[in-house]
View 1 (cartoon, chains in turn yellow, brown):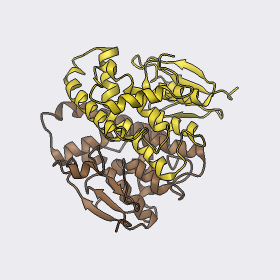
View 2 (view 1 turned 90 degrees about the vertical axis):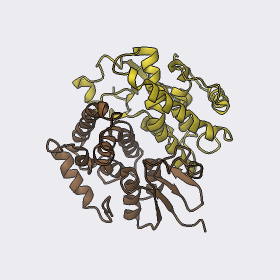
View 3 (view 1 turned 90 degrees about the horizontal axis):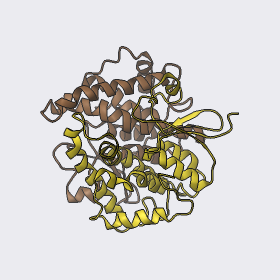
View 4 (view 1 turned 30 degrees about the horizontal axis):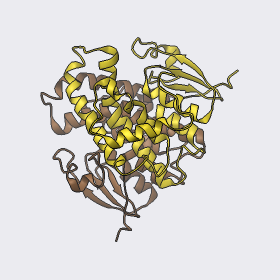
Length: 203
Length: 203
């Protein structure tokens, strides 16, 4: 049987959570296979045949092929649903925020959380902690500039751009980030958590 | 007049070159406004009103709105053309490689090139140069795993996934990267440069 969706997953990964959250909204069933992101188990020859970049999330689709990169997986399942905007201009805005998330947000918000909450400080990561924290706050400021007068990132509806940015923003405090100065972000976090079919990262 | 496309550009930026390359393929005219990426001129209040993340490329569209993130701009202009794949599965593959480019390729291949070719070594960047070079070679290895038996990244045709990855790969040698071990990449670079409407980064 290759007809079932199989998610190569990690309970602590916000990137993997994005996929579980969208699949929950869509009511799609899938098998979860848990990986440790730090022990090299995503770098085995068997795993690299699924994703040559050796990362979770990776998903096996119904046709047996594998798709990786969390935001590309979001696109694949959202297309044709209300989670992917109806106009080209808003689709481009959704992707704009999703690329912002991967380049200017995740390497700071998510990486600092992983170092602080999971790995602990090491001689390798400690020298970069202050710089990455500063850039994480810069990313939060960019988000606030959008959310201070908009409910959602792309157009006027909840979309995969919101899912992509929610994943690590809602656990940013685990990395020591203080959201007190960002009322727009805090109100948006509550709106996202109120969507039908919402699940928590720990679910 | 807000009917003309205006590209907030940088001659040394591969991310900006991606946009110029696609617009050349499509035969679209645009105005270029050049910025220095290192002197803070993309962080002025005037520029932040266009892109709150303070980066080029940013583009003013015909409706006067601004779009940022190079790969989102590629999507906007490619949709409905042959540069955006016709099937959902191949579109997801294109985005997979475009997110790979921004997360696992650009921060290493492009940043090392910028440090080596433009800024020079500094006390801030030199400690990271070896790690970033190693990860750049890892990204090249992932690309080679695709190109060793495929002509293009998404499906069977040249697409914006190829444009996104070409931009910094074809100038990787300026950062000291040696492509001798990557025959698949070298053959693909030649195929990209042979596409109708191709322009060079220096054009």
